Image (cartoon, rainbow, N blue to C red; front, side, top):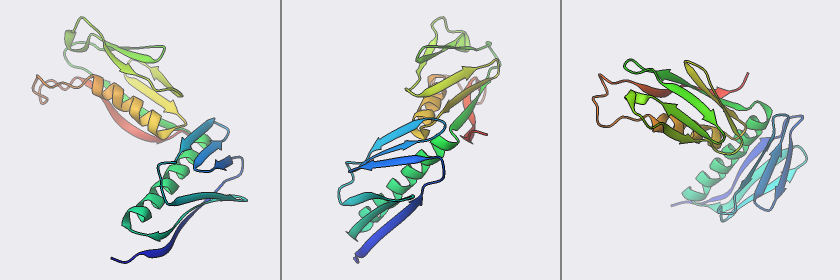
Length: 182
């Protein structure tokens, strides 16, 4: 097993985005908002800032450390894209048996009349995420890709059916589009 002497990933900071690195805590601010992330679990990986770039590096890296450098660099790139463009997930409301109504109240999404059930199904909205529900679609938006993706997954998971045949009962809310805003 060979070890690389030095593994480095450099991330360019675009105009209008400010990044501050304090130890292993990274804060990214931009026109859409602010995202912060703590990478203190990454033992042996250094994160530093030089003028308009961020350097993620490690020395004498085995396979795990090499992967960790790439992962942290990708997280920081996602943070930069999130505060500059934002992230949007679109979900489609599909029903054939009972008309589903979706309502957003506070930090929860209520899915009513799913398969004719009396009690509404509830999905949690994570902080920093906005959810808009129309008659056919649910739009989830935010600057943190992980919070947006988890909120969309919570909504999709709330309508999962296990006791019926999926080929006949296709009712539910499904993610059909992921990506950056505009």
